[in-house]
Amino acid sequence: MPKVLRAVKMDQCIACMGCMLTCARVRYQSFSVERSAIRVRTAGGFQSQMIADICMGCDPPPCAEVCMSGALTPRAGGGVKFNRDACFACEKCVAACPVGVITMDNELHIPIICVECGSCARHCPYECLEMVEVETKDYVKEEERMARDVEEEKNAG
Image 1 (cartoon, rainbow, N blue to C red):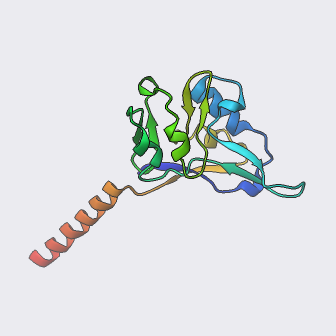
Image 2 (tube, rainbow, N blue to C red):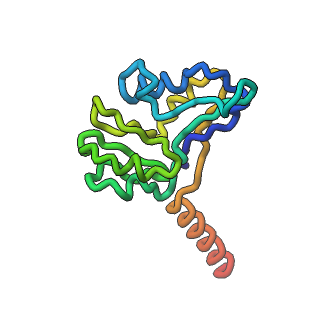
Image 3 (cartoon, rainbow, N blue to C red):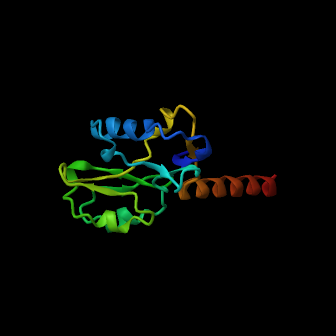
């Protein structure tokens, strides 16, 4: 079953930026948090907890729907796959993201976008982030088909 990123225990986050640095390093070969698809910040004030701005893994993803080049394509379970070679930096995906987590790298001329790889979750020392299983539309259809088959077998026998 496919998985998508969720911020499940942000009350344990100490803002070490390990998730942001891992994303930048793994996805964009950079040591700058500016090239991270995840943003960790305070909710405001000195006593408030941390918040992670992350891709919500939309299904269907609005960013892929507006992508005219085909660089962004829907991923099973939600979110997108990104084909860097097909992107021509039109920035429509940035405006289409309902949670505003897609940014544009003006030096590389590509969007900084989460592809639900889970690297950030694997490197979070406090397990604040997690990849959670989600059902896909195809998976639901398969479950329905299997249930129908079982029911038909019961009725036949």
